[in-house]
Image 1: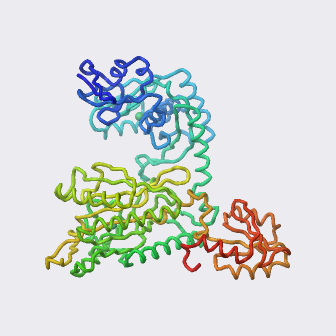
Image 2: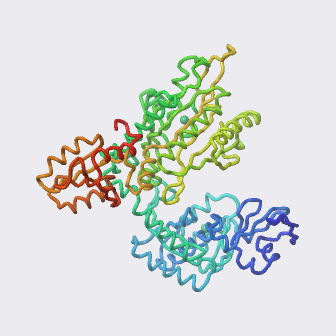
Image 3: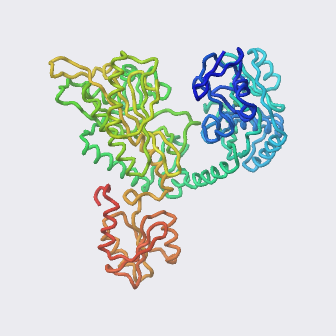
Length: 631
Ligand SMILES: [Zn+2]
Ligand SMILES: [Zn+2]
Protein backbone atom coordinates (compact mmCIF):
# COMPACT_ATOMS: atom_id res chain seq x y z
CA UNK A 1 0.00 0.00 0.00
CA UNK A 2 1.01 3.62 -0.23
CA UNK A 3 0.16 6.94 1.38
CA UNK A 4 0.60 10.49 0.12
CA UNK A 5 2.84 12.89 2.05
CA UNK A 6 2.15 16.63 2.35
CA UNK A 7 4.66 17.36 -0.46
CA UNK A 8 2.56 15.01 -2.71
CA UNK A 9 5.31 12.34 -2.70
CA UNK A 10 4.12 8.78 -2.32
CA UNK A 11 5.36 6.56 0.48
CA UNK A 12 5.31 2.78 0.05
CA UNK A 13 4.36 0.87 3.20
CA UNK A 14 3.59 -2.77 4.02
CA UNK A 15 -0.13 -3.59 4.18
CA UNK A 16 -1.72 -2.71 7.50
CA UNK A 17 0.94 -0.11 8.31
CA UNK A 18 0.05 2.34 11.08
CA UNK A 19 0.75 6.04 11.40
CA UNK A 20 3.75 5.21 13.53
CA UNK A 21 5.07 2.84 10.83
CA UNK A 22 4.76 5.67 8.32
CA UNK A 23 6.71 7.98 10.66
CA UNK A 24 9.42 5.34 11.13
CA UNK A 25 9.70 4.85 7.38
CA UNK A 26 10.43 8.56 7.04
CA UNK A 27 12.92 8.79 9.88
CA UNK A 28 13.59 7.71 13.48
CA UNK A 29 13.54 11.28 14.81
CA UNK A 30 10.15 11.94 13.30
CA UNK A 31 8.85 8.69 14.80
CA UNK A 32 10.12 9.71 18.22
CA UNK A 33 8.58 13.17 18.05
CA UNK A 34 5.28 12.16 16.45
CA UNK A 35 2.16 12.83 18.52
CA UNK A 36 -0.70 12.35 16.08
CA UNK A 37 -1.52 11.78 12.44
CA UNK A 38 -4.04 13.34 10.12
CA UNK A 39 -5.17 10.88 7.48
CA UNK A 40 -7.67 12.00 4.86
CA UNK A 41 -8.03 15.19 6.87
CA UNK A 42 -9.17 13.32 10.01
CA UNK A 43 -7.08 12.99 13.15
CA UNK A 44 -6.13 9.44 13.93
CA UNK A 45 -4.22 7.63 16.64
CA UNK A 46 -0.65 6.79 15.56
CA UNK A 47 -1.29 3.16 16.49
CA UNK A 48 -4.12 2.65 13.99
CA UNK A 49 -3.65 1.28 10.47
CA UNK A 50 -3.75 3.68 7.53
CA UNK A 51 -6.04 3.29 4.55
CA UNK A 52 -4.35 2.72 1.20
CA UNK A 53 -3.98 5.92 -0.82
CA UNK A 54 -4.63 8.30 2.11
CA UNK A 55 -3.04 11.71 2.16
CA UNK A 56 -1.31 11.92 5.56
CA UNK A 57 0.26 14.56 7.74
CA UNK A 58 2.25 13.60 10.83
CA UNK A 59 2.03 16.05 13.72
CA UNK A 60 4.99 16.29 16.09
CA UNK A 61 5.97 18.11 19.27
CA UNK A 62 6.93 21.00 17.00
CA UNK A 63 3.28 21.57 16.09
CA UNK A 64 2.86 23.03 19.55
CA UNK A 65 0.12 25.48 18.56
CA UNK A 66 -1.87 23.14 16.34
CA UNK A 67 -5.30 22.66 17.99
CA UNK A 68 -5.30 18.90 17.29
CA UNK A 69 -1.76 18.47 18.62
CA UNK A 70 -2.82 20.35 21.77
CA UNK A 71 -5.96 18.21 22.07
CA UNK A 72 -4.05 14.95 22.08
CA UNK A 73 -1.52 16.31 24.60
CA UNK A 74 -4.30 17.46 26.89
CA UNK A 75 -6.38 14.33 26.53
CA UNK A 76 -3.38 12.26 27.60
CA UNK A 77 -2.84 14.72 30.46
CA UNK A 78 -6.43 14.11 31.62
CA UNK A 79 -5.64 10.40 31.83
CA UNK A 80 -2.56 11.17 33.96
CA UNK A 81 -4.80 13.20 36.26
CA UNK A 82 -7.21 10.27 36.66
CA UNK A 83 -4.35 7.91 37.41
CA UNK A 84 -3.05 10.28 40.11
CA UNK A 85 -6.48 10.83 41.66
CA UNK A 86 -7.15 7.09 41.85
CA UNK A 87 -3.87 6.54 43.63
CA UNK A 88 -4.42 9.39 46.11
CA UNK A 89 -8.13 8.82 46.83
CA UNK A 90 -8.97 5.14 47.13
CA UNK A 91 -12.66 4.57 46.45
CA UNK A 92 -12.95 7.48 44.00
CA UNK A 93 -15.10 6.80 40.92
CA UNK A 94 -13.94 8.11 37.55
CA UNK A 95 -16.43 9.44 34.99
CA UNK A 96 -15.22 11.21 31.84
CA UNK A 97 -12.17 13.31 30.99
CA UNK A 98 -12.11 14.99 27.59
CA UNK A 99 -9.83 17.71 26.21
CA UNK A 100 -11.58 21.06 25.81
CA UNK A 101 -10.61 24.45 24.43
CA UNK A 102 -7.57 25.61 26.44
CA UNK A 103 -7.18 22.44 28.47
CA UNK A 104 -9.02 19.41 29.75
CA UNK A 105 -11.12 18.24 32.64
CA UNK A 106 -11.91 15.01 34.40
CA UNK A 107 -15.09 14.33 36.40
CA UNK A 108 -14.84 12.28 39.59
CA UNK A 109 -17.09 11.11 42.38
CA UNK A 110 -14.94 11.54 45.49
CA UNK A 111 -15.71 9.59 48.67
CA UNK A 112 -15.10 12.83 50.63
CA UNK A 113 -15.37 16.30 49.05
CA UNK A 114 -12.06 17.89 48.07
CA UNK A 115 -11.13 21.58 47.90
CA UNK A 116 -8.95 23.76 45.66
CA UNK A 117 -6.19 23.34 48.24
CA UNK A 118 -6.00 19.62 47.39
CA UNK A 119 -5.10 20.35 43.77
CA UNK A 120 -1.49 21.00 44.71
CA UNK A 121 -1.04 17.49 46.03
CA UNK A 122 -2.69 15.99 42.95
CA UNK A 123 -0.45 18.10 40.73
CA UNK A 124 2.61 16.82 42.61
CA UNK A 125 1.46 13.26 41.96
CA UNK A 126 1.13 13.97 38.24
CA UNK A 127 4.60 15.56 38.29
CA UNK A 128 5.89 12.30 39.77
CA UNK A 129 4.22 10.31 36.97
CA UNK A 130 5.80 12.61 34.40
CA UNK A 131 9.20 12.17 35.97
CA UNK A 132 8.84 8.37 35.93
CA UNK A 133 7.44 8.56 32.41
CA UNK A 134 4.30 6.88 31.10
CA UNK A 135 3.60 5.01 27.88
CA UNK A 136 0.09 4.57 26.48
CA UNK A 137 -1.04 1.18 25.26
CA UNK A 138 -4.16 0.74 23.16
CA UNK A 139 -6.27 -2.40 23.10
CA UNK A 140 -9.62 -3.35 21.63
CA UNK A 141 -11.90 -5.60 23.63
CA UNK A 142 -15.41 -6.96 23.43
CA UNK A 143 -18.25 -5.18 25.17
CA UNK A 144 -18.57 -8.02 27.71
CA UNK A 145 -14.90 -7.97 28.52
CA UNK A 146 -14.90 -4.21 28.99
CA UNK A 147 -17.99 -4.39 31.15
CA UNK A 148 -16.59 -7.19 33.33
CA UNK A 149 -13.41 -5.20 33.81
CA UNK A 150 -15.15 -2.01 34.99
CA UNK A 151 -17.66 -3.93 37.13
CA UNK A 152 -14.69 -5.60 38.87
CA UNK A 153 -13.04 -2.20 39.34
CA UNK A 154 -16.32 -0.85 40.78
CA UNK A 155 -16.45 1.95 38.23
CA UNK A 156 -20.22 2.45 37.64
CA UNK A 157 -19.80 5.42 35.26
CA UNK A 158 -17.52 3.44 32.99
CA UNK A 159 -19.98 0.53 33.06
CA UNK A 160 -22.74 2.90 31.97
CA UNK A 161 -20.51 4.28 29.21
CA UNK A 162 -19.77 0.78 27.94
CA UNK A 163 -23.52 0.10 27.85
CA UNK A 164 -24.18 3.14 25.68
CA UNK A 165 -21.01 2.96 23.56
CA UNK A 166 -21.26 2.27 19.84
CA UNK A 167 -18.86 0.15 17.83
CA UNK A 168 -15.62 -1.36 19.10
CA UNK A 169 -14.57 -0.73 22.67
CA UNK A 170 -11.05 0.60 22.92
CA UNK A 171 -9.04 0.90 26.12
CA UNK A 172 -5.93 2.94 26.81
CA UNK A 173 -3.59 1.97 29.61
CA UNK A 174 -0.78 3.93 31.22
CA UNK A 175 0.83 3.09 34.57
CA UNK A 176 -1.78 1.22 36.60
CA UNK A 177 -4.75 3.02 35.03
CA UNK A 178 -6.88 1.75 32.19
CA UNK A 179 -9.52 4.00 30.71
CA UNK A 180 -12.39 3.38 28.37
CA UNK A 181 -11.48 5.78 25.60
CA UNK A 182 -11.70 6.37 21.88
CA UNK A 183 -8.36 8.16 21.87
CA UNK A 184 -6.25 9.30 20.17
CA UNK A 185 -3.36 9.51 22.63
CA UNK A 186 0.32 10.36 22.72
CA UNK A 187 2.83 7.54 22.44
CA UNK A 188 4.26 8.45 25.83
CA UNK A 189 4.30 11.31 28.33
CA UNK A 190 7.59 12.90 27.16
CA UNK A 191 5.93 15.71 25.14
CA UNK A 192 4.02 16.92 28.23
CA UNK A 193 6.46 19.62 29.33
CA UNK A 194 4.04 21.77 31.32
CA UNK A 195 1.03 20.60 33.33
CA UNK A 196 -1.23 22.65 35.61
CA UNK A 197 -4.52 22.07 37.40
CA UNK A 198 -6.51 25.28 37.23
CA UNK A 199 -9.82 24.91 39.08
CA UNK A 200 -12.55 22.82 40.59
CA UNK A 201 -16.27 22.85 39.82
CA UNK A 202 -19.44 20.83 40.29
CA UNK A 203 -20.82 19.06 37.23
CA UNK A 204 -23.79 16.76 36.85
CA UNK A 205 -23.20 13.35 35.33
CA UNK A 206 -24.11 13.69 31.64
CA UNK A 207 -24.93 17.37 32.29
CA UNK A 208 -28.35 16.45 33.73
CA UNK A 209 -29.35 17.96 37.06
CA UNK A 210 -31.38 14.84 37.93
CA UNK A 211 -28.13 12.92 38.08
CA UNK A 212 -25.51 12.88 40.76
CA UNK A 213 -23.27 15.91 41.08
CA UNK A 214 -19.64 15.09 40.38
CA UNK A 215 -16.46 17.04 41.02
CA UNK A 216 -14.82 18.39 37.87
CA UNK A 217 -11.11 19.12 37.99
CA UNK A 218 -9.94 21.46 35.24
CA UNK A 219 -6.38 21.60 34.05
CA UNK A 220 -4.22 22.39 31.09
CA UNK A 221 -0.99 21.23 29.50
CA UNK A 222 1.44 22.57 26.92
CA UNK A 223 4.42 21.49 24.87
CA UNK A 224 6.58 23.99 26.77
CA UNK A 225 6.63 26.01 30.00
CA UNK A 226 6.67 29.44 28.33
CA UNK A 227 3.33 28.71 26.63
CA UNK A 228 1.82 27.66 29.96
CA UNK A 229 3.12 30.80 31.67
CA UNK A 230 1.63 33.04 28.97
CA UNK A 231 -1.66 31.17 29.24
CA UNK A 232 -1.79 31.59 33.03
CA UNK A 233 -1.31 35.35 32.68
CA UNK A 234 -4.25 35.44 30.24
CA UNK A 235 -6.32 33.24 32.54
CA UNK A 236 -5.68 35.52 35.48
CA UNK A 237 -6.79 38.50 33.41
CA UNK A 238 -9.92 36.60 32.32
CA UNK A 239 -10.72 35.81 35.96
CA UNK A 240 -10.46 39.45 36.92
CA UNK A 241 -12.82 40.23 34.07
CA UNK A 242 -15.32 37.45 34.76
CA UNK A 243 -18.69 39.10 34.05
CA UNK A 244 -20.35 37.18 36.90
CA UNK A 245 -17.94 38.81 39.34
CA UNK A 246 -17.93 42.25 37.70
CA UNK A 247 -21.72 42.14 37.35
CA UNK A 248 -22.07 42.01 41.13
CA UNK A 249 -19.19 44.40 41.82
CA UNK A 250 -20.57 47.02 39.40
CA UNK A 251 -24.16 46.38 40.56
CA UNK A 252 -25.38 45.43 37.07
CA UNK A 253 -27.34 42.20 37.63
CA UNK A 254 -27.54 39.07 39.69
CA UNK A 255 -28.75 35.51 39.25
CA UNK A 256 -30.93 33.68 41.74
CA UNK A 257 -31.99 30.06 42.25
CA UNK A 258 -35.59 31.28 42.28
CA UNK A 259 -35.39 31.55 38.47
CA UNK A 260 -32.28 29.77 37.20
CA UNK A 261 -30.69 31.25 34.09
CA UNK A 262 -32.85 34.38 34.20
CA UNK A 263 -30.95 37.48 35.28
CA UNK A 264 -32.37 40.10 37.63
CA UNK A 265 -31.22 43.34 35.99
CA UNK A 266 -30.36 46.14 38.42
CA UNK A 267 -30.88 49.81 37.46
CA UNK A 268 -27.26 50.21 36.32
CA UNK A 269 -27.38 47.05 34.23
CA UNK A 270 -30.62 48.25 32.65
CA UNK A 271 -28.86 51.41 31.49
CA UNK A 272 -26.54 49.24 29.41
CA UNK A 273 -29.38 46.98 28.28
CA UNK A 274 -31.48 49.97 27.20
CA UNK A 275 -28.54 51.66 25.50
CA UNK A 276 -28.16 48.59 23.29
CA UNK A 277 -31.92 48.49 22.77
CA UNK A 278 -31.89 52.16 21.72
CA UNK A 279 -29.06 51.45 19.31
CA UNK A 280 -30.92 48.44 17.90
CA UNK A 281 -34.15 50.44 17.41
CA UNK A 282 -32.41 53.40 15.83
CA UNK A 283 -30.29 51.34 13.43
CA UNK A 284 -33.26 49.13 12.54
CA UNK A 285 -35.31 52.18 11.64
CA UNK A 286 -32.46 53.61 9.58
CA UNK A 287 -32.07 50.30 7.75
CA UNK A 288 -35.71 49.83 6.84
CA UNK A 289 -36.84 47.36 9.49
CA UNK A 290 -40.29 47.60 11.07
CA UNK A 291 -41.04 46.68 14.66
CA UNK A 292 -43.65 44.05 15.44
CA UNK A 293 -44.81 42.48 18.66
CA UNK A 294 -46.04 38.91 18.75
CA UNK A 295 -47.38 36.72 21.60
CA UNK A 296 -45.10 34.94 24.05
CA UNK A 297 -47.39 31.93 24.48
CA UNK A 298 -48.89 29.86 21.69
CA UNK A 299 -51.02 26.84 21.20
CA UNK A 300 -48.59 24.02 20.57
CA UNK A 301 -50.17 23.59 17.11
CA UNK A 302 -48.05 26.49 15.88
CA UNK A 303 -44.88 24.69 16.89
CA UNK A 304 -46.13 21.43 15.40
CA UNK A 305 -46.56 23.27 12.09
CA UNK A 306 -43.22 25.06 12.31
CA UNK A 307 -41.40 21.83 13.13
CA UNK A 308 -40.15 23.01 16.53
CA UNK A 309 -42.42 20.59 18.41
CA UNK A 310 -40.61 17.71 16.79
CA UNK A 311 -37.07 19.11 16.84
CA UNK A 312 -36.92 21.48 19.80
CA UNK A 313 -39.59 20.39 22.30
CA UNK A 314 -37.17 19.35 25.04
CA UNK A 315 -35.85 22.92 25.13
CA UNK A 316 -39.33 24.46 25.45
CA UNK A 317 -41.32 25.40 28.53
CA UNK A 318 -44.70 23.79 28.07
CA UNK A 319 -47.93 24.93 29.74
CA UNK A 320 -50.61 22.24 29.96
CA UNK A 321 -54.15 23.60 29.56
CA UNK A 322 -57.63 22.08 29.84
CA UNK A 323 -58.05 21.08 26.23
CA UNK A 324 -55.07 22.74 24.59
CA UNK A 325 -51.39 22.55 25.35
CA UNK A 326 -49.52 25.83 25.19
CA UNK A 327 -45.83 26.59 25.02
CA UNK A 328 -43.67 29.65 25.62
CA UNK A 329 -41.88 30.66 22.46
CA UNK A 330 -38.22 29.62 22.27
CA UNK A 331 -37.76 31.75 19.15
CA UNK A 332 -39.63 34.43 17.25
CA UNK A 333 -39.78 32.89 13.79
CA UNK A 334 -43.09 31.00 14.03
CA UNK A 335 -44.88 34.10 15.39
CA UNK A 336 -43.41 36.36 12.70
CA UNK A 337 -44.37 33.95 9.94
CA UNK A 338 -47.87 33.56 11.38
CA UNK A 339 -48.16 37.34 11.28
CA UNK A 340 -46.91 37.50 7.67
CA UNK A 341 -49.28 34.70 6.69
CA UNK A 342 -52.28 36.51 8.16
CA UNK A 343 -52.77 38.18 4.77
CA UNK A 344 -51.89 37.49 1.16
CA UNK A 345 -49.03 39.91 0.56
CA UNK A 346 -47.98 41.65 -2.63
CA UNK A 347 -44.50 41.59 -4.14
CA UNK A 348 -44.55 45.35 -3.65
CA UNK A 349 -44.37 44.85 0.13
CA UNK A 350 -41.12 42.88 -0.13
CA UNK A 351 -38.60 42.91 1.34
CA UNK A 352 -40.50 43.08 4.60
CA UNK A 353 -38.19 43.19 7.61
CA UNK A 354 -39.88 42.34 10.93
CA UNK A 355 -37.84 43.11 14.05
CA UNK A 356 -38.70 42.16 17.61
CA UNK A 357 -36.49 41.77 20.66
CA UNK A 358 -38.98 39.74 22.67
CA UNK A 359 -37.97 37.67 25.68
CA UNK A 360 -37.56 34.04 24.65
CA UNK A 361 -37.33 31.08 26.99
CA UNK A 362 -35.31 27.96 26.43
CA UNK A 363 -35.17 25.18 28.93
CA UNK A 364 -31.41 24.77 29.05
CA UNK A 365 -30.06 22.11 31.40
CA UNK A 366 -29.13 23.50 34.81
CA UNK A 367 -25.58 22.24 34.35
CA UNK A 368 -25.20 24.15 31.08
CA UNK A 369 -26.19 27.54 32.50
CA UNK A 370 -23.37 30.05 32.83
CA UNK A 371 -23.77 33.66 33.99
CA UNK A 372 -25.14 35.79 31.16
CA UNK A 373 -23.50 33.78 28.41
CA UNK A 374 -25.82 30.76 28.75
CA UNK A 375 -29.28 31.71 30.03
CA UNK A 376 -32.86 30.48 29.92
CA UNK A 377 -34.33 33.96 29.49
CA UNK A 378 -32.97 35.24 26.18
CA UNK A 379 -33.59 38.60 24.56
CA UNK A 380 -32.49 38.24 20.95
CA UNK A 381 -32.10 41.23 18.65
CA UNK A 382 -34.11 39.16 16.27
CA UNK A 383 -35.44 39.96 12.82
CA UNK A 384 -36.98 38.04 9.95
CA UNK A 385 -36.66 39.37 6.44
CA UNK A 386 -39.30 38.16 4.00
CA UNK A 387 -38.00 38.54 0.48
CA UNK A 388 -38.18 37.32 -3.08
CA UNK A 389 -35.50 35.11 -4.58
CA UNK A 390 -33.79 37.95 -6.45
CA UNK A 391 -33.61 40.04 -3.25
CA UNK A 392 -31.64 37.50 -1.19
CA UNK A 393 -28.17 38.79 -2.02
CA UNK A 394 -28.99 42.42 -1.24
CA UNK A 395 -30.71 41.51 2.01
CA UNK A 396 -27.84 39.32 3.19
CA UNK A 397 -25.45 42.11 2.22
CA UNK A 398 -27.52 44.46 4.40
CA UNK A 399 -27.32 42.07 7.38
CA UNK A 400 -23.55 41.68 7.02
CA UNK A 401 -23.01 45.41 6.70
CA UNK A 402 -25.13 45.98 9.80
CA UNK A 403 -23.19 43.33 11.75
CA UNK A 404 -19.82 44.74 10.71
CA UNK A 405 -20.85 48.25 11.83
CA UNK A 406 -21.96 46.95 15.23
CA UNK A 407 -18.84 44.93 15.88
CA UNK A 408 -16.59 47.78 14.77
CA UNK A 409 -18.45 50.09 17.11
CA UNK A 410 -17.50 47.86 20.06
CA UNK A 411 -13.95 47.25 18.77
CA UNK A 412 -14.66 43.55 18.38
CA UNK A 413 -12.93 41.79 15.54
CA UNK A 414 -15.57 40.06 13.43
CA UNK A 415 -15.16 36.72 11.68
CA UNK A 416 -17.65 35.24 9.23
CA UNK A 417 -18.26 31.57 8.54
CA UNK A 418 -20.36 30.34 5.64
CA UNK A 419 -22.01 26.95 6.14
CA UNK A 420 -23.05 25.10 3.00
CA UNK A 421 -25.46 22.27 2.03
CA UNK A 422 -25.55 19.33 4.44
CA UNK A 423 -26.19 15.73 3.46
CA UNK A 424 -29.81 15.80 4.66
CA UNK A 425 -30.57 18.95 2.65
CA UNK A 426 -34.02 19.67 1.31
CA UNK A 427 -34.23 21.09 -2.20
CA UNK A 428 -32.27 20.50 -5.40
CA UNK A 429 -28.57 21.11 -5.98
CA UNK A 430 -29.43 23.90 -8.45
CA UNK A 431 -31.41 25.62 -5.71
CA UNK A 432 -28.47 25.33 -3.30
CA UNK A 433 -26.02 26.52 -5.94
CA UNK A 434 -28.15 29.63 -6.20
CA UNK A 435 -28.64 30.32 -2.47
CA UNK A 436 -25.03 29.58 -1.50
CA UNK A 437 -23.92 31.73 -4.42
CA UNK A 438 -26.07 34.63 -3.18
CA UNK A 439 -24.53 34.43 0.31
CA UNK A 440 -21.00 34.25 -1.08
CA UNK A 441 -21.63 37.19 -3.36
CA UNK A 442 -22.90 39.24 -0.41
CA UNK A 443 -19.79 38.39 1.66
CA UNK A 444 -17.49 39.29 -1.19
CA UNK A 445 -19.31 42.47 -2.09
CA UNK A 446 -18.97 43.67 1.53
CA UNK A 447 -15.24 42.81 1.34
CA UNK A 448 -15.34 40.36 4.26
CA UNK A 449 -12.93 37.50 4.76
CA UNK A 450 -14.78 34.31 5.49
CA UNK A 451 -14.25 30.67 6.19
CA UNK A 452 -16.37 27.98 4.53
CA UNK A 453 -17.75 25.14 6.64
CA UNK A 454 -18.69 22.59 3.99
CA UNK A 455 -21.82 20.64 4.84
CA UNK A 456 -22.55 22.56 8.05
CA UNK A 457 -25.66 24.39 6.85
CA UNK A 458 -29.12 23.58 8.17
CA UNK A 459 -31.19 21.22 6.04
CA UNK A 460 -33.42 24.15 5.02
CA UNK A 461 -30.74 26.59 3.85
CA UNK A 462 -27.17 27.93 4.01
CA UNK A 463 -26.12 30.35 6.75
CA UNK A 464 -23.41 32.78 7.76
CA UNK A 465 -22.40 32.64 11.42
CA UNK A 466 -20.91 35.73 13.00
CA UNK A 467 -18.04 35.28 15.40
CA UNK A 468 -15.99 37.87 17.17
CA UNK A 469 -12.74 38.04 19.03
CA UNK A 470 -12.57 40.02 22.24
CA UNK A 471 -9.72 42.02 23.77
CA UNK A 472 -8.28 38.85 25.37
CA UNK A 473 -8.19 37.09 22.02
CA UNK A 474 -11.12 34.80 22.85
CA UNK A 475 -13.53 33.90 20.08
CA UNK A 476 -17.31 34.01 20.61
CA UNK A 477 -20.09 32.93 18.32
CA UNK A 478 -22.56 35.78 18.22
CA UNK A 479 -25.30 36.23 15.69
CA UNK A 480 -26.30 34.44 12.56
CA UNK A 481 -27.77 35.14 9.15
CA UNK A 482 -29.70 32.10 8.05
CA UNK A 483 -31.56 31.61 4.80
CA UNK A 484 -34.75 29.57 5.07
CA UNK A 485 -36.66 28.13 2.15
CA UNK A 486 -38.84 25.74 4.21
CA UNK A 487 -40.53 27.19 7.29
CA UNK A 488 -42.34 29.98 5.37
CA UNK A 489 -44.15 27.34 3.31
CA UNK A 490 -44.99 25.23 6.38
CA UNK A 491 -46.64 28.24 7.98
CA UNK A 492 -48.50 29.35 4.86
CA UNK A 493 -46.58 32.54 3.97
CA UNK A 494 -47.54 33.67 0.46
CA UNK A 495 -47.33 36.72 -1.74
CA UNK A 496 -48.72 37.70 -5.10
CA UNK A 497 -45.89 38.19 -7.59
CA UNK A 498 -45.62 40.66 -10.46
CA UNK A 499 -46.55 37.66 -12.63
CA UNK A 500 -49.94 37.50 -10.88
CA UNK A 501 -49.12 34.12 -9.40
CA UNK A 502 -48.75 33.18 -5.72
CA UNK A 503 -45.23 32.58 -4.40
CA UNK A 504 -43.68 31.57 -1.11
CA UNK A 505 -41.18 34.13 0.17
CA UNK A 506 -37.72 33.29 1.40
CA UNK A 507 -37.01 34.25 4.98
CA UNK A 508 -33.68 35.41 6.38
CA UNK A 509 -33.46 34.80 10.12
CA UNK A 510 -30.94 37.16 11.54
CA UNK A 511 -29.65 38.21 14.96
CA UNK A 512 -26.52 40.35 15.19
CA UNK A 513 -25.82 40.84 18.88
CA UNK A 514 -27.14 37.31 19.31
CA UNK A 515 -28.81 37.72 22.66
CA UNK A 516 -28.53 40.96 24.60
CA UNK A 517 -27.79 38.98 27.78
CA UNK A 518 -24.86 37.18 26.22
CA UNK A 519 -23.64 40.28 24.43
CA UNK A 520 -23.56 42.29 27.67
CA UNK A 521 -21.72 39.44 29.40
CA UNK A 522 -19.12 39.44 26.64
CA UNK A 523 -18.85 43.26 26.56
CA UNK A 524 -18.31 43.28 30.33
CA UNK A 525 -15.29 41.00 29.94
CA UNK A 526 -14.08 42.64 26.73
CA UNK A 527 -13.96 46.05 28.45
CA UNK A 528 -13.10 44.66 31.91
CA UNK A 529 -16.19 46.56 33.14
CA UNK A 530 -14.90 49.94 31.89
CA UNK A 531 -17.70 50.42 29.36
CA UNK A 532 -17.49 52.99 26.57
CA UNK A 533 -18.79 56.40 27.57
CA UNK A 534 -22.12 56.16 25.75
CA UNK A 535 -23.28 52.98 27.51
CA UNK A 536 -21.74 53.59 30.95
CA UNK A 537 -24.37 53.53 33.70
CA UNK A 538 -22.80 56.62 35.33
CA UNK A 539 -20.93 58.68 32.76
CA UNK A 540 -19.55 61.53 34.84
CA UNK A 541 -19.11 61.87 38.59
CA UNK A 542 -18.63 65.28 40.16
CA UNK A 543 -16.70 65.33 43.43
CA UNK A 544 -16.98 68.47 45.56
CA UNK A 545 -13.79 69.06 47.55
CA UNK A 546 -15.59 70.39 50.63
CA UNK A 547 -19.00 71.45 52.01
CA UNK A 548 -18.64 74.82 50.35
CA UNK A 549 -18.41 73.27 46.87
CA UNK A 550 -21.51 71.10 46.99
CA UNK A 551 -23.80 73.63 45.42
CA UNK A 552 -21.41 74.41 42.57
CA UNK A 553 -20.92 70.66 42.02
CA UNK A 554 -24.69 70.09 41.83
CA UNK A 555 -25.06 73.00 39.45
CA UNK A 556 -22.34 71.63 37.19
CA UNK A 557 -23.93 68.16 37.22
CA UNK A 558 -27.25 69.72 36.17
CA UNK A 559 -25.63 71.31 33.14
CA UNK A 560 -24.07 68.12 31.81
CA UNK A 561 -26.71 66.41 29.61
CA UNK A 562 -25.52 62.91 30.55
CA UNK A 563 -25.91 60.37 33.36
CA UNK A 564 -24.10 62.33 36.06
CA UNK A 565 -23.99 61.94 39.82
CA UNK A 566 -22.43 63.95 42.63
CA UNK A 567 -20.48 62.23 45.39
CA UNK A 568 -21.33 64.39 48.39
CA UNK A 569 -20.47 61.73 50.95
CA UNK A 570 -18.17 62.65 53.83
CA UNK A 571 -15.24 60.64 52.49
CA UNK A 572 -11.93 62.31 51.66
CA UNK A 573 -11.42 63.47 48.08
CA UNK A 574 -8.78 60.76 47.62
CA UNK A 575 -11.22 58.05 48.71
CA UNK A 576 -13.95 59.42 46.46
CA UNK A 577 -11.59 59.35 43.46
CA UNK A 578 -10.65 55.76 44.27
CA UNK A 579 -14.33 54.80 44.48
CA UNK A 580 -15.04 56.36 41.10
CA UNK A 581 -12.08 54.44 39.72
CA UNK A 582 -13.37 51.15 41.18
CA UNK A 583 -16.82 51.81 39.73
CA UNK A 584 -15.05 52.41 36.39
CA UNK A 585 -16.82 55.71 35.77
CA UNK A 586 -15.43 57.22 32.55
CA UNK A 587 -14.93 60.80 33.87
CA UNK A 588 -14.58 62.36 37.30
CA UNK A 589 -14.58 66.11 37.84
CA UNK A 590 -13.10 67.29 41.14
CA UNK A 591 -14.63 70.64 42.08
CA UNK A 592 -12.87 72.90 44.61
CA UNK A 593 -11.83 76.56 45.08
CA UNK A 594 -9.71 76.59 41.91
CA UNK A 595 -12.53 75.26 39.67
CA UNK A 596 -15.00 77.22 37.58
CA UNK A 597 -16.74 76.85 34.20
CA UNK A 598 -13.55 78.24 32.69
CA UNK A 599 -11.36 75.63 34.36
CA UNK A 600 -12.44 72.10 35.34
CA UNK A 601 -10.17 69.37 36.75
CA UNK A 602 -11.20 66.36 34.63
CA UNK A 603 -9.91 62.89 35.39
CA UNK A 604 -10.50 60.07 32.91
CA UNK A 605 -10.88 56.46 34.11
CA UNK A 606 -7.38 55.04 34.26
CA UNK A 607 -5.82 58.26 35.52
CA UNK A 608 -5.34 60.78 32.67
CA UNK A 609 -5.90 64.27 34.09
CA UNK A 610 -6.49 67.51 32.29
CA UNK A 611 -7.81 71.00 32.85
CA UNK A 612 -10.65 71.89 30.50
CA UNK A 613 -13.28 74.59 30.26
CA UNK A 614 -16.88 73.42 30.51
CA UNK A 615 -17.30 74.12 26.78
CA UNK A 616 -14.25 72.00 25.91
CA UNK A 617 -15.40 69.18 28.17
CA UNK A 618 -18.89 69.18 26.61
CA UNK A 619 -17.38 69.15 23.15
CA UNK A 620 -15.19 66.14 23.95
CA UNK A 621 -18.10 64.25 25.52
CA UNK A 622 -20.30 64.89 22.48
CA UNK A 623 -17.64 63.16 20.34
CA UNK A 624 -17.74 60.11 22.59
CA UNK A 625 -21.51 59.74 22.47
CA UNK A 626 -22.70 59.82 18.86
CA UNK A 627 -24.70 56.66 19.57
CA UNK A 628 -26.36 57.88 22.72
CA UNK A 629 -30.04 58.62 22.43
CA UNK A 630 -30.90 61.99 23.97
CA UNK A 631 -27.33 63.21 24.35
ZN1 LIG B 1 -9.81 9.44 27.23
ZN1 LIG C 1 -35.82 32.93 13.27
